Length: 258
Length: 208
Image 1: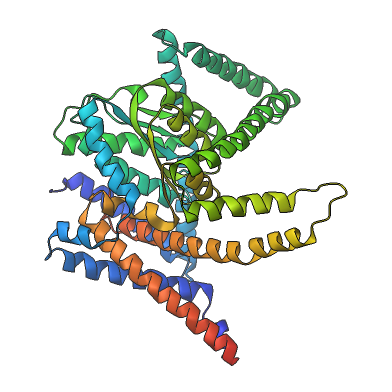
Image 2 (image 1 turned 90 degrees about the vertical axis):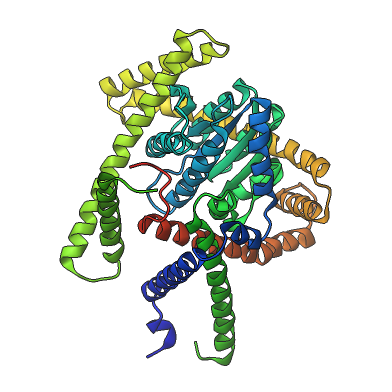
């Protein structure tokens, strides 16, 4: 049987998934024996997350809030992953900043994502042992189409003095409008998305842009859960495996085996 | 942190449902496929309900802004009036009726198109800001490529620039495709990683 016919998309997909799951659990259990701080130091440096960690502290000192835009991708389909990562980041940021005067302001463009964000805010307050002072306007759906979401979120960003504006989730090119609003009100803008058009727009408009899969490493760099560090390590190894497979494919193609 | 029994129960249901849907794509069993389709339909219904929840949240927040006068309250009032009018028209005329389509064609589309036009200006300003903020080789290559693509795509009467157009085609077909595929592979790995973490319950940002 021909090699390319045997390696169907389903077989490759299953192999990919199982390899990741195996690597993830190896690192997850191995990690429990090591210091988590050491794990974090071993990760390569991403400037955007270093600045974000500093900004959370500055926001508390200055008594200013943070604006977190978690996008309009929803939870259905492939775009849901970016939304779930933004919730992990929201949990850590709220836990760290809820002891300050101002709570983070969350905007989203999808009802399901907004409901989970509300639940995430409650969890963050509970874990930080702080009584929730959240208002209805703390977690808003500002529009249900990408541009109406951006238009509504721009008002929220310009409405109050904020320390920083974090865009994390599924965005399209409308992310440029949100970043511009943050820039106009002199906020630090850190932005990451799973969409290619949004990433190119963010590179030009944000102070720090998360390129490629950097958004998906957000949990690990903000020290959310030990599982995040294991996941980042497994992702790195899987990337090398894919590079080797691509190179092998090129060689086999040149040799006429494929 | 110890999990409460009810939350463990919810976690088990979530993981089991996720596994059924996932395995339904690989294992060719009619019962599994039926169950998978049923779960996917339920998810679609829940997503529809979530849109309603989102709209109610939007209306409530803007109602609060109108009832407690604040700067920008007029915009909130405009939103509430527009919502009520659109809702009534869609109820009376049906969402595909001529009046509903008129609102879509002559109000929503122009507003969103003007936001897109605003984005073009915003990006132009952002490019100059980028040079001010990060003046390095990376920024120069980014801006130079953007200018080359724009000029190569523009039709200027009486001016023929075959070299520029070939360069644009090469840029779009070789480095852009290679870079985009690399980024997409990375995003794909990130999506799988997030999926595995959520499916196995090792990452659970929300309470549930």
